[in-house]
Image (cartoon, rainbow, N blue to C red):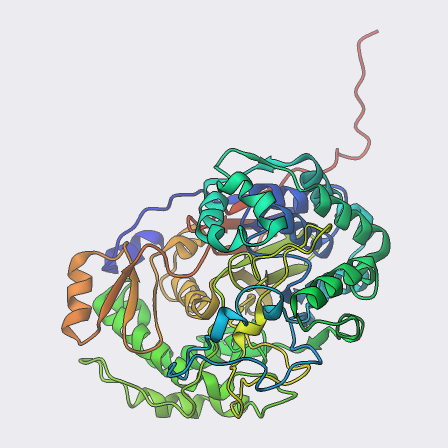
Amino acid sequence: MSTSTWRSRAGTPFTCEKQPAHGSAGVVVSNHPLASAAGMEMLAAGGNAVDAAVATQFALTVVEPMMVGLVGGTTCHIRLADGSHRVLDGMSAVPKAGRPDMYRPVKGAAPEVYDTEGRENLVGATSVATPGSLRAWCQALERFGTMSLADVMQPAIRHAARGFAVTPYLADCIRDAAADLVEDKEAGALLVPGGLPLQAGTRLVQSDYAEALTLVSQQGEKALHGGALGDRLVECMEKAGGFVARADLTDYPVAERMPIRAHYRGWEILGPPPPAASGVHIAQMLNILEGYDISALGFGTVETLHLLAEVLKIAFADRAEASGDPDFVKVPVERIVAKEYADERRTGIDRARARQWSSGLARVAAEGADTTHLTVADGMGNVVCTTQTINSLFGARIIVPGTGMIPNNYMNNFDPRPGTALSIAPGKRVTTSMSPLIAVKDGRVRFALGLPGGRKIFPSALQALLNLIDHGMTLQEAVEAPRIWTEGPFVEVEHGFPEPIRQGLAALGHTLKIMPTVAGGMNAIQFQDDGSMTGAACWRADGVAVAQGGGLARAGVRFELPG
């Protein structure tokens, strides 16, 4: 379908703000230009997509310190040139000292609200869970990369040591978190010096963090998981009442999992399995929507948005039932992804009226929305699609003294009340909505995409898939298109939807909440039949796509001067 065709049927026109990048030898798309450049530096040096992805990840810990760090979690989807897929689960886990009653829940809080007295599971050392991101990145590089850890970490070390210009986006994030950051001596000195949040354009130098990264480049993940950095982290935890201990770091295992496979109109969509909630619910929603002609209904029309809202409510009504660490709870994957179950749920949709949907379990984890994503492909058939985070904005909002490391606050994603599927238990991994997706048609990879945004990630990824498969948008259009999100009482809609569309949704019974953004900056790659690739990033973050074209000189070419 051409762009003009989908626009002729659309109820919501829009104009893209960014331009895609095209190349044949590799594409890197991340939410910061320096991080994308770090990945491209590896591809230009002869590395593969895994080398580039790991380099990009380390660079993001420097230039997006509010989103990702060594003491965080990651979900990494890798497709190798041989066609095999695997998901490396490096998500954070409850420390061994964790107990179901370790926090004091706020009295009277709704079941889906995980607030605790004194914000003990949200801010500070008591909110830190056992990290897995560094170990996952290092294992990915060791198993599937071609370059040394020291080589892929050089851009990150360089930017930490020499500094980089704070973007308006980062400056806004610092300002939003400043009240907590100033309470920590190290974080306040670095990010809110003199009580004033860093301004856009300021050069941010992270000397301690540069030294920590250098140590990792020399010792690998053992620097944190059993070495000096880990000792500093444990010391910080012990002094402030945290729970992460040395044994948590040394014993943490990265889990390799097989992806969930959804089938939609001749496409195969591969996404992460539990404990991620995304793969099963994207499959569920696609199965339900397959019963409608989404293309004919048009993008951004009242009819299409109403169906999307109802399908999202169905998915979230079932989400808690399919959320959790499969080592601790029974996850009914087969039932939720079954076409028959989709048929059953579809019959309950009233196309003329919004409705409420019942849930087996009402409790849903309150995930942090402050995540980052990157998508990388080389010219050899390898693709890496990975999302990583320290959970909330600036994680626990502290810095481990002498290291520059900002730890996660993933304990906030567990239910502080005993007796639920998401209650705290030693070693239990956090559930997540991370959605590093790869779409395959006729046995060939066509799209790889993902984004940050907490519980809004997989609904946004779903909408991008519909934009590409049903509406026939270009990749740039698909990632920038206006989005909606809901899990029940109200529907969030971005400003891009025009007033007549909003009024139409309200007339169907939807209560609307107008939002500047729904979820974060999506990063995607499209693969063409001729072997070329297109990378696209959207306006919701500092996303930049970088592509490599050209190549080596023709064999036998020489440059000669006249005699």
